[in-house]
Structures are given as C-alpha cells and as structure tokens.
Image (tube, rainbow, N blue to C red; front, side, top):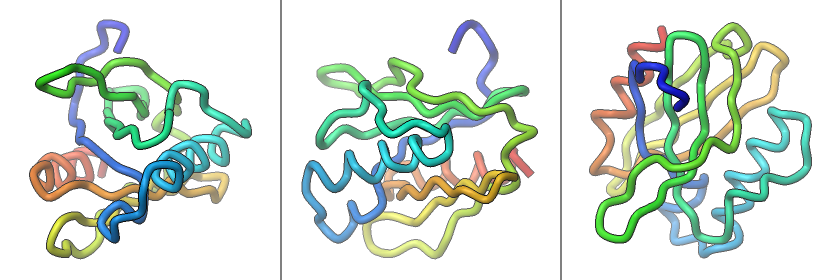
Length: 131
C-alpha cells in the first residue's frame, strides 16, 4: 500500500459467492465492479476464482488481490480511488456464510462484493471507519 497506514481493511469476494457461483462469475463480478468504477473494461490482476482485499487509508480506497500459500495477504493493488469519490460504503444483512458490501461512488457507479463470515468484524469496521 505504498507505505500509507491502513485505517481498515477486509477480505472480499465477488457478489454471488455465497450462492456457490463458480470461478469466472466471481472474477467477473470483481473485475466488472472495478472496470465500471474506474472506466476500464478489464482488470488483468484479478483472475478466475480470486478473492480480494478492500483497504481504506486516509486518502484512498484500494482494491487489492490476495496472495500466499498458507495465509492470504493483500498483494497487488488493482484499483485505487480517492476517498472524495466514494459516496458510501454499506454492509447488508449477514446470511449463513457472508454479507453484501456495496461501495457507491459519487459518480453513481457501485462496486458490489460479499464479506466472508470469518472477516465480518473487519467489514463492519471498514464501514464504520469510512463514515
């Protein structure tokens, strides 16, 4: 994250993950969300079945890939958005395995993700600290 201190962060997966949507649809949800918000059609660093990490710093919201063999850790930044361009971050009602997380931008586009159950507290912390 370029040495900037992390205020909050959470693991995320593409929308539909909780319903067992496989590989390409998950990657498409993450890649499509980034593409629509960033004005680009593709994100090369997000590949089929990959999970991500949403990080909040004082100045930016970052979407990152996760890497590692035993423990997944934030790796590469695939999208960065100034906080001033983020209108809201909301987390919906939790189901058995995840909760929806939406990032709405001032221009009207939305990133839609899910926060896996083991990282729900981190998701709620990110929403709270953004507000």
